[in-house]
Image (cartoon, rainbow over all chains, first blue to last red; front, top):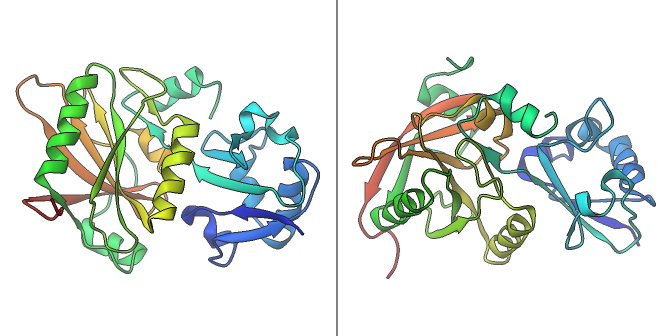
Length: 105
Length: 161
């Protein structure tokens, strides 16, 4: 048994086109580290250089947004299904102003 | 001006195999998007038009909540986003169009729009409601930070009644 991870179109270049990959770990951080060993570069699209969850993606453990589960510290286990979706956001606001409003992009 | 704007055909051909540099969309859906944008004005409105995978035909209009409820920013609610994307998956659909309104500026992708654009197969439709009596509707591909404008071809009855 493993943890199933659903990869959005925009990140499938890191998974050889695969829509679903499998990984292991006790927390989201460990899972992402494990995925990055086989899908190099994926981690950089999910985690900022400062070590936070990237603003451009939403990650869900089963039916919950990980931002409500402790973000990168969210617990995961075998049998869980992880979904990654590119955040859909934007608007007329200038990028710098949006970044300030959202606490950094 | 946004860096990396390019002419339509070359870029699209390079980025996508099955994509034409035109968005063909039913008038009834465009009218529903415009009504949504007017209803939420002066806040930005946002939503999706789903269609069968690889068809490039938008058939099902899904207005989304703007969780930011802002005049200058929009953001899908993360739980509604997951629910709608799963529903599309179950129906073998994909987001053919992702739309939002600018309520005081032109219907052209801002730097924020370009930074967030994460669906390389989607048509990014922008509507401006800055003029009370007329709307601007424009469509773009946004791939790897490159904005490519495309034609909007509004037709009658591509959607089954």
